[in-house]
Image (cartoon, each protein chain N blue to C red):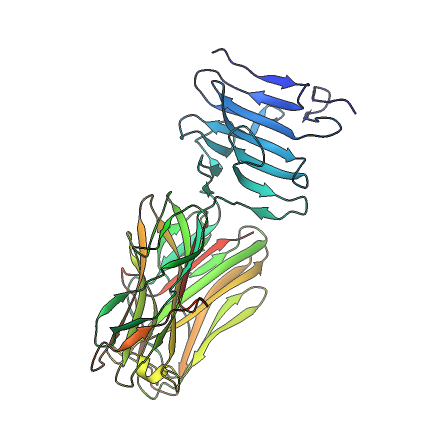
Length: 220
Length: 220
């Protein structure tokens, strides 16, 4: 079939059709510079794509499959975990910033494994989920608080007596999750403080199994 | 450079280009009424935008930055919290609706700070989360139950001996819940808590720090 791009003034429609094969697209330029291209990628299962630049399939920002599944491969989203135990970090009131030194993914490169900090690349609403595990909890550690600190405010999660809640083998899980408003360049970190113990003897567990992990993504 | 809009029958594409500067866009009208405009906003760092009406940068519904970060400023999303402590509200099996009386944000005006209820503006899947901090607990408060109540169904959340596990520093602990929920247009959601087997001395913490908060957004 020959190419069949047409504006039909009889009915309110524009049809773009490359013919037998090829992408069907609209290119948005400014002064000859390719800014975005939207259309159907003939080499990608005929998915509908919004791509930065002048091609589909290279810098895709939005992909809707023909089955209606939407992905956004450059959307800020990360999952990081603590790969090794951090020993004796809290228990007698010391606030410990939780370390997540290994990334599973970091789509927009917004998480820093050295500072254990997420930095918002753009103003928006972000969702965060944190789950951690302590080891070597003692019965006299009768207070635990954990929280996510963002530039705008602090969000608290698990709040209990670590000593009362710990397992028979001195483990305890704790967590925080929230949606948060963040401005561009705002930061977020995770902390835990366990108190009233005779010493800072509690460890934050780490492992290649992501026992202590933190994830987040830009919601809207 | 002169404006260069073209339909290219050699490549099966349409190119829109305003020339040296300005937005590159396609306007969708019905009977001359501007319904939606899609294109590149030259005043917004060349982001790709879907805007309601006849202009980019006015009523934007979808913004894809040149770096692939997608925001949707009108997408239903809210975060509200309890701003002042509600004293002596449960503990004796009194079941209460948690008050989140102050909004941090409410993008689509769907949360009511008087009824503490979220109302779904459109049928879809909504992520909802709650964290509630309770204080004034004693060892006799041996039961916490809480629920996320939506029009379609009730989701049971934390249930445990809250008195036994309370934080010794301020006799505090939390109730929490998170869920992806199916909601029809006009369906509602709110959160209830009951603490039992003690006296009615348990407070629901409220503060400018959002210890007690309710958040949600339209997921898909």
